[in-house]
Image (spheres, rainbow, N blue to C red):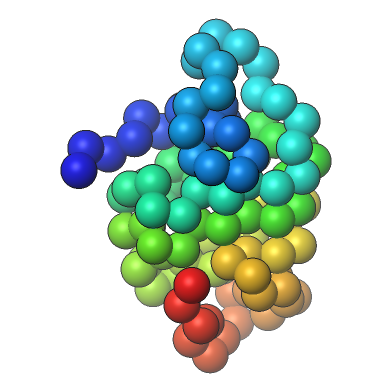
Length: 106
């Protein structure tokens, strides 16, 4: 499977992960993004999601980037408005970088 272009994460439909608008369109306001199984390989690609200030819930599990050992911490620091990641609350420990128990898989 071919990796998705990083900037296309912004224009994915909030609930299905398919492109919903051309890349030149401003990102839609959406509090949730379900990007499971979208082959997001590079953890740094989530920086594009920081342009969604209303984003509160994000599902990225079942992507190669979710296998990164500091996945939850990186997402929590990059997306400060995120409250729930892969159906688990983002706790203070994730934001400050303390070691957390392994999260349940999707």
